[in-house]
Amino acid sequence: MTDVERDLLHLLKQRSVRRGEFRLASGASSTFYIDGKMAAIHSRGAFLIGEVLWERTRHLPINAIGGLELGAIPLTVAAVISYHRHGQSLEGFWVRDQAKRHGTQKMIEGNLPPHAKVVLVDDVITTGGSVLRAAEEVRKEGAEIVGVVALVDRQAGAADRLREQGIFHYEPIFTLRDLGLSDG
Image 1: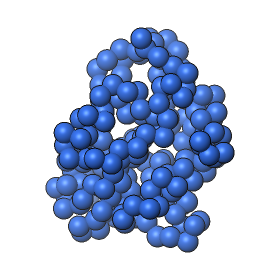
Image 2: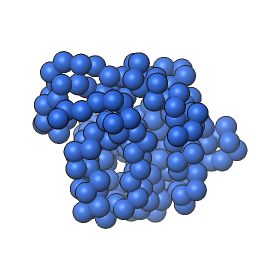
Image 3: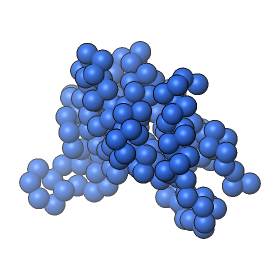
Image 4: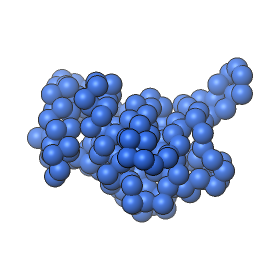
């Protein structure tokens, strides 16, 4: 684990983990909730997330990064800023839950170039449903999904579901074990 990852892990533990009874986006219930956005919208958190995403994706042949709103928006912005900081160019985008009802009425915001090679990002992944919804929309635009990176994997089947859908490069930055958590 790099120093930047260690700092990010500490920040996630401090700002993003909540205990109680929660219903997850997957429909499952949990005794804890990981709100990655609480780290992502903090000045240090945004910096650390951007750096980790740059480190994890810089070797991939991509020209865009994004995912499903809301979780992917701060991650996407952090990543493109880090790419710029390192002298590289990268487009950012995010997929809406539903199309806008005004203006262009589009599902994808930002600049997703034609035939883009993309990495999808998410703050917390459980079964992969949010990432797969985003994957469906970007594939409709002709994009190729090169990989998926998640801040935290709750280890509830996402890797298998992604593989079933032809997404073979999946890289969680942290797991529940890293956060010292377990629903079992």
